[in-house]
Length: 380
Ligand code: PMP
Ligand code: GLN
Image 1: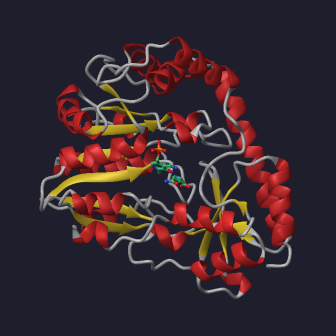
Image 2: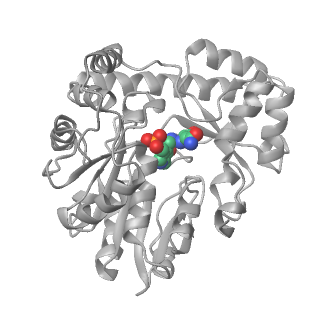
């Protein structure tokens, strides 16, 4: 057994979902929506499953999907990607992350990470032999800071891993943050692995900017997306990676021995979904923004302190005004005594240091949110 993985706890998402089930709780913990996803996309998957083909699709992904991804990013983000050499389909963003870290890091390479960070990052970096250099982002703004970057980057830095928009803080990094990071990447000749799975779930008229589009970044950025987030279909695990052909050749070597490919019917359906018009994307965002506002307002009325949420399906509450000092204990009590599951944000900090924030998923039907709010009424 290897010491890195042997010592790991079970991921907080699985743990909290199990607790939610055991206690009959409303699950605002793990990020998955009540929305079943667009009917036409699900029907396209069903048709493709029945009609076939159901044999191995090409290793890099169905041509129809690779072309749809390139066209989608051209339309939404102004990127010019070659669908034949710069796009690869993976089994979720998770496979893309694991493959990229395996493919790009050699033992001893330094990897810059930002906390809070998605819980998969650090174990994967360590298992690939990377030496983590962690930059703590300060709440409530969670912005990148030049002095902190200067401390973290060095001649040994091989890669920086950025999640934008950022889960769990719901921060959208904008032009200034990204330009700053791009300057560091270019100066130190670093590869940027950019987990942009939340790129479409941004609110209040803001637009997501891909790091890849910044000066000097086209040839050094690996961009990751996920159909699970775009179409509210988290169980499908269809992800995609885009990168310059030189990088993609190496990424493909990891992918070929991790999963090799992804179910063809799901790929075909995602290809049809990516062609949806701007109105569909606007409506999707508006729907989630309404849910965010409903939960935020309901929490505020009940005495909770709610942090701003510019993107994702999550908002955070600060539990200090409630006299609470331990987010894990707070979430345990919330699920066992009050019947609402949430995620302690300390799970996103490698040293567990940040103990005062709790993440709630608002991607739920109004009735689910209202029922959860009722249950939380006695907490604050
Ligand atoms: N990265 C981030 C930041 C996420 O929030 C998630 C899932 N919520 C993933 C990766 C995993 O995506 P997938 O389900 O496509 O593997
Ligand atoms: N990414 C999802 C979240 O942040 C959970 C994914 C998972 O359960 N592995 O809630």
